Length: 367
Image (cartoon, rainbow, N blue to C red):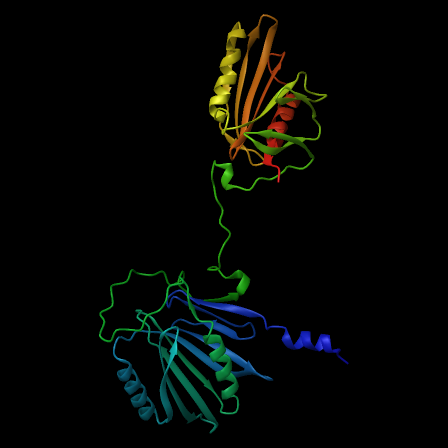
């Protein structure tokens, strides 16, 4: 026996849905996943199950071209009914999406003598391609099928999100470009696979402020400040920090010297590019020779900072050195680092250690 809570869950679980999209009509709607949708050359055929009858009703969808008045459409429908020997039950007009929906209900008998009910409708929109449907079933299940179809029609929407307008009788349609039949073929897919659903926006930019900051793994947080703001300085765990003046001295067992770091802000200090130029110019006189200078292309680090790096290889009175200078900006704040290594070139291990430090440094507001 089902408990009350389980029974409530069963009764309120919504049916699985799909979305039908017709690029030619520019329309889409949601429908039960149990409905069988087949796209044919000139129409779409939907089979609607009711109870144990898996083929209780059919709904045909067609692309209709019509620019005359609503009265003329209904006249054509009456004449078609009379000419085919069907019985006209009624004709009427409703409103759907702000435009007239022209409806005609008829009855007839099939070859076996069974009675059939048919409901047709034209969405009288100001478009070159109008939605026309024809629903056919037996009288016993017609109320059920009609109710299901009306519920589905309530989900009808334009693919581009624009509102529909009523047709202007006698309007001359504008010429249309030739369309690719395959690209405009109607489809029915699960809601989550809908190709026209909103997508996540991917931004390609060199500006890290348009991307979220991300504290890298295995970092330590140190309180600091710059430009009057209280900040967190995130530094990879493997490095030790000591306060040195207004900044810090960073050391690592595998790094042969000290790296100095300054937390700065454009609110009371130079811009990062000017700071890097100043850092580079302040020590150039100490070099006997400069063999090579490398200005790396700016990049966004794993932490979300825009990093600029200058590497200078040369020699001092004491011998060969590699001087490394870098800044990493985000928002109004940035860090500036400097180091010298007594060697003609960094080893691969030292290069990886320097790179991991640049990727992991981050200044963030302390809130």
